[in-house]
Image (cartoon, rainbow, N blue to C red; front, top):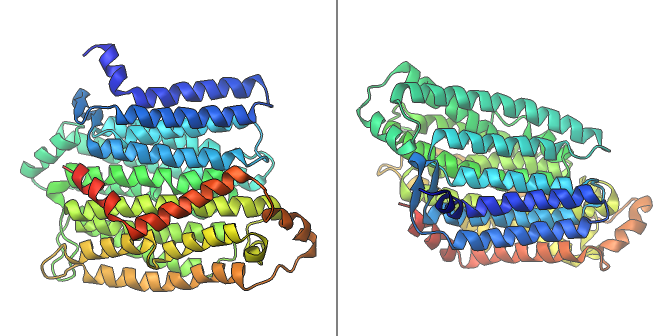
Length: 491
């Protein structure tokens, strides 16, 4: 294969990389090019979407290091779209200095997500994880004026490097036992290989590493501080883009690479394998995330603990296995990502005007800005799983796939626990809406700046939030459009 053909197949990643360099050059040239940097970054991402649409239907390079399928193309577009909304969100955050450098790091993280989504080879997956992780560490600690940002970045770096160590050790054991790093070849080897302790250890360590990445309990301790201390656009991207790519690649690893050692998490017939491990992680995440979220009075911290619970819900589809389970996981993580970007967008605007993101800062938001209050209502109710929003269908799809995964309804215990967790979550999501619509602002010192929430304000951010709210509502009313694309893209 010539370099020209290789560049053609890797053109979306190349376009984003060139865009990152151009934005970085503009940012270093002058601090007054803020709008230009945002425009160039957004334009580059839009062009990258066009490049993805021009890719062939099927292609594979270097033993799976770069794979092009309808599924990888679809989720590259989703990752790019999430990055675009993050760029738009960051353009309204005037507290961040060095705007060009910040946008360049977002674009580099996006390249990592695209490599993760588009690879079926362990070495390239690890490279994608590290590129994404290193970018997100810097994005978390980027606000030099806030000590919480530095603290969050340090904690995220320490936990993330530990997760990388677990992942790399697990992958090395798997390579040692299978003799290959290609997921398809590993799956073929495991069909004939006997159960060995080192293989089991490699699988468990790899799953623990990814449990850190998706913030599944008990490996979630970095998430609350990172979500609360990081700049809001950074928290939004961590909660959305990295979660989508992590679940896509985790699904490939367990269903393609580790498929022959699936095991069973059924309550009446447990069989050793990766499925019981993920089932335990899902159960712990649902319980810990929802119960701890009840005690939060900070909206960003509440969203962090709810993210732990949602990681548990999303794992249900992988535990169920099969095309239905994987498609349910992919649909839910996509819907959740767009919802979280929108919720953090509202938090960013409120924090910009009031100086905080506690419950008290949202008091009386409905009278100051009906648009923001309405958007936040859609996002919160979707996270709670209220029809006709996308979160309701996502949970229904997940729970149905898990319930029908076994003829004897062996995963009923996990579905019942997820339903119980959803019931708990309804309380704290409604508490946010109660503060917005019922409580009145009680701090006179913040009353003057809060008035600008209802005026023109950052128009671009409000348009972006409105688009995200429409997406969440649309995918709830007509979910078949995305579900059909995902199912058709699955092999």
